[in-house]
Length: 261
Image (cartoon, rainbow, N blue to C red; front, top):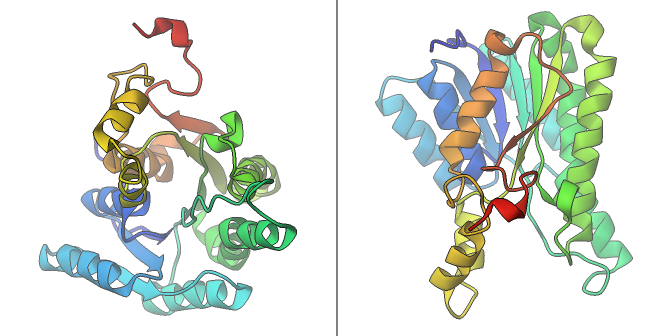
């Protein structure tokens, strides 16, 4: 299916690896132009070089998305280079393990700022450009916002707030034709996830224990599957879809565990 997003400029935060990389790859595959905003210069430049060597357009901005000023810089650089923004994909974040028993008020505040603040900052600074293109915003949330996880209050609170902002922004921005949706992943094989699995004494057994609880196929979701959903939401094929939470998780969150055998 041709999604008709060729030439569209898409800011993807945390776009050089993991879920963000999957989104950037899907955008490029459909002819879009990903602007990858992230802190890892090596992986970001390598990914952009790969795209460009294959005749595709892409742009990397090295940035820590920790302040309004750095987020504004991402938007300004994108507009200076391409003159437009068609979509914003808020993705960057880290499950930092700041809970009640293993955290503190200061760590909780820091977690909220690092996982949530830039979602608002980037949407704020992109808004004028998105009004011109009748663009779209996609917020990458997490199952932790729905199910909880334990010992990750800051991350879970941020992910829940991202879902609330998805609904809030879809209402506020409907008059401009701007659509806002959220993707809710569960168990996705990313570099961060691989590193976490390796912390267990028997990582292969731990991974098997997790995948056995995923109803559809008993396997991890791939970054490409998240990326393809994002590209679909960016496209005009979903012109009537806004304020939605789309679970790309093999039924992990909602399907009855009694289905597992």
